Image (cartoon, rainbow, N blue to C red):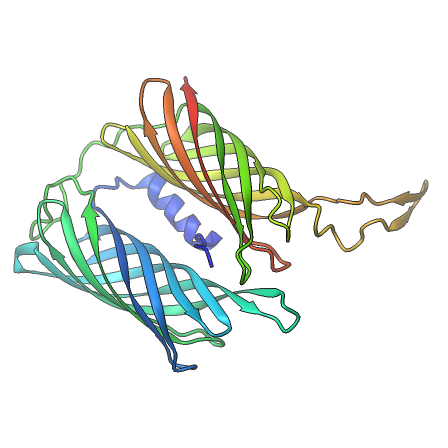
Length: 345
């Protein structure tokens, strides 16, 4: 199963933080390890991407993507948001922390007829971690998670990994987490972007196809973008979708605005020619007579996305986007895109 993105509730919190707070102390961590299910007594791998914002030496918030590996009948992963209590030790070079939060998961399960079921759900997540700072920017982290939904798999994961500190200071000193700097009134300029890449349908067979997209992006407030895009998911055999999406994004920049990251959420209006609506070809009566409904009526679903861009000159940049499409008919998909764009005021 391919990665999934943040649900709407997590996005709303990140959007508020990105738009209103000076993001001075940030940590990005990649971890890998093992997973054990309490229900099935099976083991598998796990890997995790974690973004943590430190508001105070004793308090932090994080968002994370967690892949729980593959066990018989289940390919589960999802996204989590946690609040952390932290205890800095050794003059800020070691931190112990405990977190609690919400985990929104996607579990791909096999059906007797050979098809796949995409089960969506939520669960509490409890975590403990130890972080050791090795240099001015780099650190290692050991992390344990327990995920316990009301139904389905209860899992324990253990992972170790490395991370990078994006704070204003060159190392996390005891007693503070970075000297606040004057917040730049950064607003994204107009952008026109074109992309190519791959779509992957979240079934047990991960059918895929070539995909492409075009996007218009414009900053509407400090650290808030709006986009209008066309997405074509190709023809991975089990679906054949394309449509139009509009999204709001929380964005932030680094290194004198050369690098930018963002997370977006909005509606995706699409047509799936492999799975048209259930009233395909039917007729309805109206006050002026009987009309036939279209063969391929449009449907709407949430589209959540992550993006990263690099600015090469005053006008030109490259950008990658990871789109997550959640569907009500067991055809969730990820669309991975890379491209370039032109920027102007």
